Length: 267
Image (cartoon, rainbow, N blue to C red; front, side, top):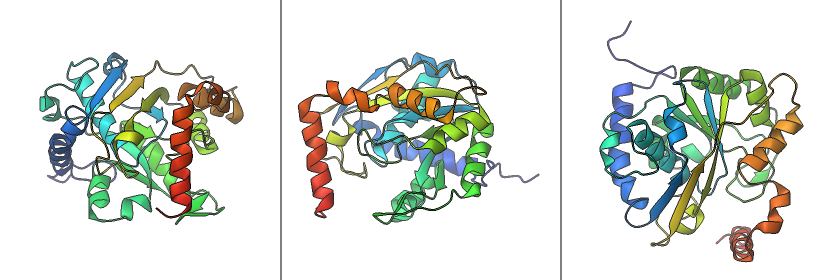
């Protein structure tokens, strides 16, 4: 047994701890300072087991969403309910938190590569790559890595696989749920798209109220519910089911259309 303690992916835990501490301190004011984050339901976090938990969430930026979750999870585990006040909760962070991210995203520059060391499980998208629609088989190594991460701790995933609102939930998440039977905790976020740029690295606008709602674990019949039923349950849980479009404010839809237009024209 080596003297340096590592996680199942070979990452040195001492180094990972310091990465979380440093980046946590550097990013804290993004959620409590330049902008404020309203948190609901974080008491659920403290009552979860140490392993075998899958968090599912809608997605608004590449990195700001998951960084916020690292803050909220660690704050809750240190006894802070619905607040990230006092960044001291980062001194002893939970080191077995992982998040699923597209491999091409985590290779775009030095900073994403560093952030990947903090807990990324990189996967190859089966439907899109380099801005183009594709169709390829699931890499079995990707699903195996998620299995390893669930066995070791908690995994955060964004089942739509995109930052665009109301896009379909990918069936891969439902397959993971049926196969590995994790506790599934839904999270709904808002305000991050208005606060940050698409990558979630640059503050786009100050004074925005961000929100994160952590819901009770889903009740899932792992043996008898179909993939389609689990997908629909996920869509409702993260408030991304197509039927909910009818109750979304017009300004939110307009903002999404504007964003799609900018992407289409390369802005």
